Image: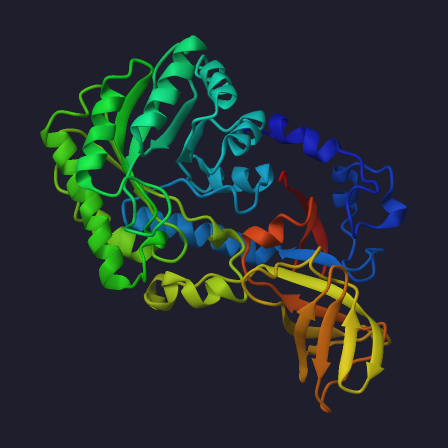
Amino acid sequence: MSADQLGPLRRERVDHRFKALPPDAEGLTVGELAAERRNLFTGGFTTPVLALSAESVEHNLALLQTYSERHGLVFAPHGKTSMSPQLFARQLERGAWGITAAVPHHARVYRAHGIDRIFLANEVVDAAALRWIAGELADPGFRLICYADSLRGVELMNEALTEAGAPRPLDVVVELGAGEGARTGARTEAECAAVADAIAAAPALRLVGVAGYEGEVPNADDDSVRAWLRRMIALAADFDRDGRFKDTDEIVVSAGGSAWFDAVADVFAEVPELSLPVLKMLRSGAYISHDDGHYRHLTPFNRVPDEGALQPAFRLWAQVVSRPTPAQAFLNAGKRDAAYDLDLPEAQAVRDARTGEIRPADGITVSGLSDQHGWVQTTPEADLEVGDWLGMGLSHPCTSFDKWQLIPLVEADGTVSDYIRTFF
């Protein structure tokens, strides 16, 4: 991804489309506004405003790069977390093999911003999307790998790609389901073998490996996740022994969300010697911002603290707009601004509207969200009045990014150094 491909993002005009940006910046380009290095609190930003810590993002990028390298993994972080070409560029600069997508729309965004390697973690059966993929395969420098978990899916892929005149086969991995009641994926080794044979018989497809998502293992724990990962490794070895990878020059084995990548690293280290080089691919995505809730509890670094620790990078700042009782306050941020699907925001800091001082949010709890209001409960120790700013940590990166089209990247002293564009 080149600077030229990101250039249009910096030339985009600041206007009413982007919430929280300073009204007096109307008409500036994003690049011009970034060059002004305004302060988040005194630079004219309106509330609510979502801030992304520049230092924490850089720390997290570096940590997963070194972790992947240390464990002999290639890294294709899941882009659906941020859907931000600027952050994709940072991930690629930090050694990522490519970027993972969930749906064809993601892949279109990636290609529009110069991503040359995409792992699409789904079976693609949409004929219109497959026609688009066929066109992209005309670029010899482009590689897309996608899932298949059914005979019908293989049939639909082969049919659409053939009709579209795809210039070369599409790379496909067989998805092993994580168990009964889990999400997608063929449930048994026999079903996986049947799908693999169907791919081999389809001229528009090429079998290149096996993959899946260990986060869907029912009642997942360390033992059950590792057992499922070993099934995947054994499946790859069986396919190799039976000569199913005859048309590729490497075997792809891929797993790894943001909750079990330590197990993935350990089990992938057990991959036996196969007839071809093995591309051991990790796909964790939530790491880039981490969070103050769901992933704070789930991160594998809790189990392997010697390997490092991720830092939460998001803080949502909202203003107190009502203080109707000593035990209650209301903010001007709600469901349209904050992730709430897993946990409510966590009150962390108060910025005093009178003095600008920032203090801990003692005695303050976010108890609920309306569309545009945050419900806050306070104890007698809480020091909070109308006009104060409340800084909140968020839970679940994926549903934090998707509410904001342009997110200030903020340095520790409050300076906004850039703006992160998202495409959801």
